[in-house]
Length: 176
Image (cartoon, rainbow, N blue to C red):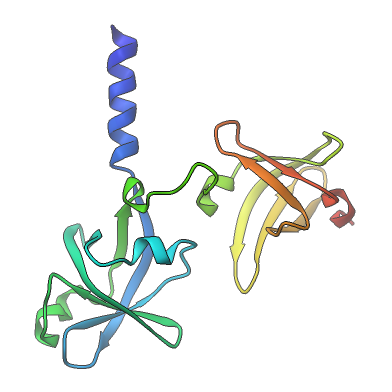
C-alpha cells in the first residue's frame, strides 16, 4: 500500500499548492481597499468575490474587486476602513491552484519552465528557461543557441502539461 499513500500525499500537495497572484502596494481611498499590482495570467479567475486568498500567511475572503488604471483594487473580509487594512500593505498574495478552476488546456506560465520545445518537424529546439511576461509573453528557449519564442498561436500549437512538451510551428525560423 505505499503507492496508495504516496498518491494521497501527492494529491494533498497538489490541492494545497499555492500560486503567487500579486502584491499589495498601498491602500486606495479611505473605504478599505488594497491597491494590488499583478501580472498574473488568470486575474479574472483569481480575483473574484468569495475567493479565498492568503496575504502574509493569513487567509482572507475577497469581498470586492474593481480595476483602476494598471491596478486591481481589492476589498477583503468586508473590511470598510483604511485603518483595518493598513497592516496588509507590502505583502505577496497567493491563492490555491485548485481554486483557479483551470480547464484541462489552461496552464500557468510557470508550468512552461523546463519544458522541451519541439518544432512541427519533431526537432528538439531546446528547453524553456524563462518566461518574460510583458506586453507580450516571450519564452526564452535555450539549447545550443538561445532565442525568444512569442507565446502566440502563430508559433505555439499546444502545450502538454503532463509530458512538459511545447509543440510549435515555424519556431526554428526564430533561431539566429
